[in-house]
View 1: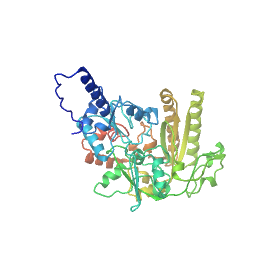
View 2: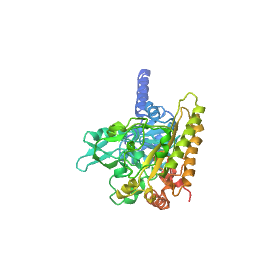
View 3: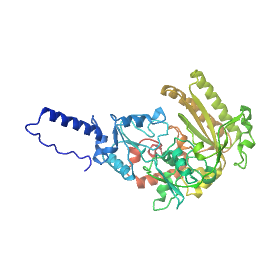
View 4: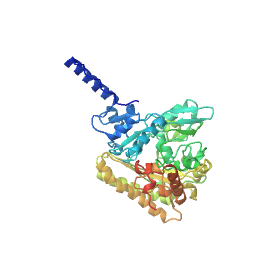
Length: 451
């Protein structure tokens, strides 16, 4: 069996010191090559015993350091006891079974883009790093694409572009498919096809398929996503700088698809027609999110609070080495309608009767100390917007977008009582031992929801 210890052959009586030294050096080389930990590591031991010796990276391995440094946000650069990098669904299964058998805690990493600590990494446990499962394969017969959980959207788009196809994937180049899809990612084609989820619900596990769509890692590890493709083409996008005095005009008109460039003056803009690979670009650190009614007065309030936040951060960081932003993203009712038509999900957006606006408030700082200082200020912006929106009839949309939320926001609760019940029933059915609640603590967890 791979990884099994071999019996030691007896030393010849006339063995020379030179021969003994040579064998010692050989043993050291073998140990380094097979990555047996130089210090006791029970997590690595159980994975090696499961036949995953070549997939395990311990702290003395240069590849371990490379993978930790590859997290885009410093908050996620923790210190797992070891990393395991499976290359197939069977190896993922073997790793999880071994860790569960030995009651070892673990985290799951796809692209590694979630920015808060312990969401996709862990101190002292095992990080199941899906980074080697990053392929994209197009099937012309079904017009679908099979996508690995660690595939980054820039590579997915580049691969599919060769066939003149695209998928409703992420809008940022470095985001991985797994976290984006399980969080219910907003995408370039949401107005036409709804939020980005997998293509086919069939089979006897339709209940599990539905609750996966928006629940993160509560129900297991997805090792392949099958997505419908569409004919690729040009997408209108870019960044626009608009005068502050036009803020009262920013309520989205009806119909919602009216191009914004026709009704709001622009001081400077990079907007143009381009393909999906061109528009995929990356963002930053402390995130909070909120969704509210498409109402101009709420938009103005959010802008005012963000402007105040930027002034506070500027006063603290006089050299200007920081960024802040408050992005406004339309969530018209058509998104929920298309999502329901595609089989539904657990987000509960279809229960909200109005077109909505989602905001992501962000501050990126150069040190963790500064980030800790800024966090309550960022939350204060979102709390202030929520309080103002609550003063308007049906002003607050309950849904919180998992992929934009801070760990102290109540994401799963925002999906509503009926969807919480669906998730609890699925967890009891498919994970009766609570493995992904007890041993995989990262992310937004059902077990943490009271009531």
